[in-house]
Image 1 (cartoon, rainbow, N blue to C red):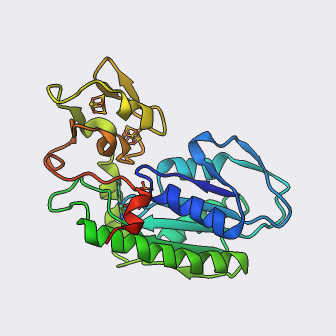
Image 2: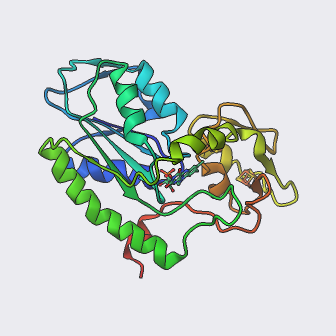
Length: 251
Ligand SMILES: Cc1cc2nc3c(=O)[nH]c(=O)nc-3n(C[C@H](O)[C@H](O)[C@H](O)COP(=O)(O)O)c2cc1C
Ligand code: SF4
Ligand code: SF4
């Protein structure tokens, strides 16, 4: 059973592809129940995007609270989608799973197009690079699925520098919904931002208002058809990113 979280669609595609290639099923974490019945010998997978070299908060919260029915030391793995580096994601996941008495048998990272826009000089990938990353990911997922099917215990990650663990908390501290705002003259009140939010954190009044349980997934920012949503000082004028299967067939 694959549990996944995704804001702009990369990790959703990775989870669904992995499910297809391994003959498994995928469940979106915000819609998963608290009790999940596992089949005999079914692998348990977690698929999610890397946020400041860590998993999204809802993924760690889910690991803390989910109850597995029929858990018999099932093979357990994670796949972290990232743009460049995962930091100490295996350390974090091993610790979170060990706290529940579960072993983390394998961990993989998959490079995907960038969706992060909140810092200066950071932007989404140009179409050619974006499409190339997705095609490479498609090939990589076949290898990962083979490892999962063989129950191979391995950690194959783009960790980057060990120093990332030191700066990660500084970034995480600033990741709050407080930075979101809407440019009212651009907002057409379509409601797409509220509709896509995976944790129902947006209220329309009729302009969007952000609550406090934001995952920082960027879905609202990316889905807005008029780019009316900004975050802090650095998102204005930048191209947004949202996964599309069509990119896999483009040059
Ligand atoms: C708040 C935030 C922080 C991010 N931090 C990292 C990071 O530390 N390392 C990295 O390689 N990519 C980082 N990214 C990029 C995403 O992990 C990557 O684009 C991911 O595939 C997006 O997945 P999704 O489309 O399923 O939401 C970050 C993205 C966001 C929104
Ligand atoms: S408010 Fe926006 S960034 Fe925050 S969780 Fe919802 S969609 Fe994601
Ligand atoms: S998606 Fe954009 S245009 Fe639509 S309601 Fe939200 S902010 Fe307004």
